[in-house]
Image 1 (cartoon, rainbow, N blue to C red):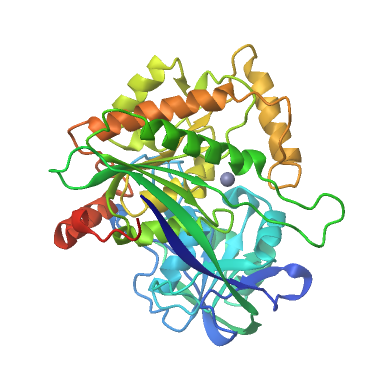
Image 2: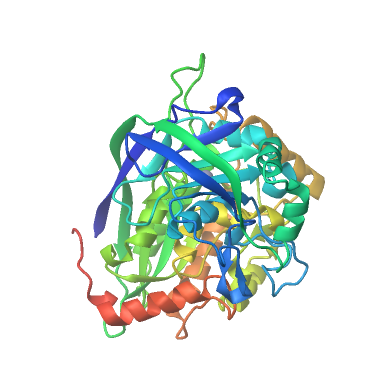
Length: 466
Ligand SMILES: [Zn+2]
């Protein structure tokens, strides 16, 4: 059975920015225009995290106001407090905009500081000054204006209240912090041009052999979109996305072929999704995560593939996020069978976990992680792998030059496909449940999902197409 889901996307253009490009602005409400004239409230990190007894919005009402937020999360060396130096979702800009909207704010300004964002202002400018894509009919509260501002602009804003930005940022990392309304208003007239279009997620299912138990599935995902064509560019202007994510799609198709021939079929079903609009902010997978009731079965784990360099046989595998689940001992055992060393996340502070499609499923409670190679390849030293990775990021990543090369060696992609197949076998046949570990940031979401599943009887959901 193959089901085809429609994702409705609305594209909009930023057409009202501040002079000098110091402010990158958009408004996610999907209206043609927004007029804002509201006071600005500095809310520190803009985080409400009950599990850490942390609430930057305590004692202040931001309804109808604009919040000013520092990027990242309170500094910590304690793994029980915001995961120590590992970036949690609370530190990501997406969370800050979402939380501000949930609190009733109409606008949010995120203060950029290169070390805290882990990327320079140029990245903010290039990714926010073009067409922005949103899911249509998304029910979550939205801001009328969501923007970033440079550190110096924020310094000026705070100085109007006689406050020093550096002191306030330091204070924001402590429990003594209290949000402050500044004697400054944001006045803005934001105009957007809206272009509606559709882009499908393509979902396939191999039914499991066990008809008696609740319908559960192992989920494999890979995004099939890239950045399209740039009409303004001379010469080769096609973003082929051969590595990102032709490789993941190849693996997805091969997994589907092998699973279809697996006899007997495992007790649980196997679901496959080629998802769209990853490069626009994980939108295709976000749609899936928000519409799990449209799937005929309940995913119990998501294994995602995104950009696996076809440069030989890896001796390391990256499965960041797996260590946060009860499935990890199985992952370790299978990695050992495949002679793959598990490479820990080299930059936990950069929050890579939140940057590919598995996150869309993880955040709604499904244990989820990506499978990719590390940097050590057979016949080469680590420095070679690092150089390959650096070359890819500098010269190919998100450029038309991410194109197929005749001499590529796909044996490593095949190895990681087999590894993912073995993980899928283990997950599809094991008797226990797969869970986020106690205290994990997604544990709550998983509990919520489990209670919903019981109420709705997810196992009996409609099958969208045959
Ligand atoms: Zn990708």
